[in-house]
Image (cartoon, rainbow over all chains, first blue to last red; front, side, top):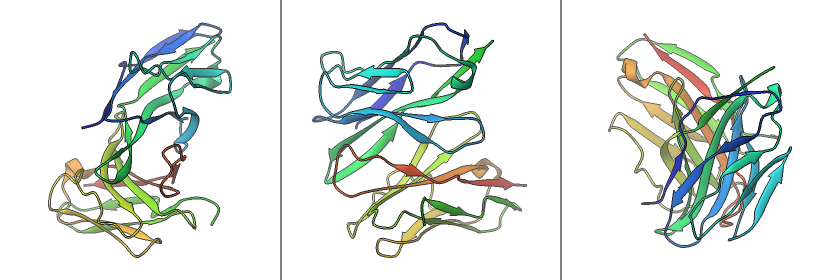
Length: 114
Length: 115
């Protein structure tokens, strides 16, 4: 079945460092890809998305490019802030067996220190 | 309402008791998901409702777990004979039907503690 694999955390960075969180997927067909974020004490919310190959999703300084050839959707940010500390989830929706099911990776915890 | 609403926000129950968790999705959202999130862990898919289609129950961990949804509205997740390993945050999400790029909106979750 379809699945998402993320790099294990926690990821610990100093403020203004460069961030990469790796995400790869396995899917039948052409899924849409997402990054969701869960800030401490808050619910999950959509960070960015991409719906077809070579699309780049971006929001709040974060970017991710849909790479069909490597089945990847890595999350990047050039300069992280303390306020970016959160858990980040990579996800996909694919059409399988008549369903459009949202499937999540295990999540990667990011801690940014001043 | 404006967002996905879950109740109760917290539930403490004794081992062996049954519990019922409620989710009110965003009006007009035909897709509804339940997930479980154990402390410090990722999202575990439980069940998925899509309109009037038969639900995808492939994630339910045992026959103690069941869920219902009336039409395109409220859903309830029931856990019978709760065990300590059921302690987790149970998250509900809803989205519009059909589109592969549609965003899922999450509730704040129900924190279940089995003592």
